[in-house]
Image (tube, rainbow, N blue to C red):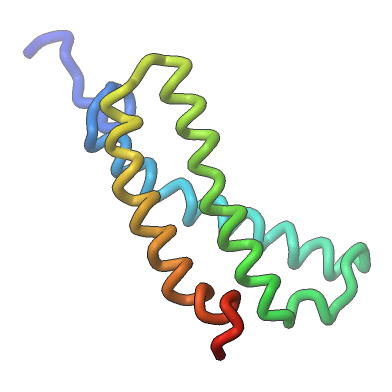
Amino acid sequence: MAGKRFILFGNDSMITGIGMGIAFPIIMYAIILTMKDALISLGVLPEFWGDLPTSTRTLTIIALCGNLLLIHYFNNRRWYESMRGLVFPTLTYVGLWVWFFGLELMGRF
């Protein structure tokens, strides 16, 4: 065991992909929401923009698309098992997004 260390997010494994796939969109959403609030308080964006329901829908899908950055990162390092693990939380998040916003987009409120 000497010389070996446990690195959860530093190796190619399905657990790495699942963990990063769960955490990264949440972190991206928090960053994007903070940036939006800062732009509204600076007067760059109008104040009513933060209250629009499409704002939440759009920011959520942009945060979800942040997983594309992870796919690129994993692909450059040839971490194919991590890419496979990333699929599960991404599909779950897409399903939740469609569940919450899909009927609104289809015209059924």
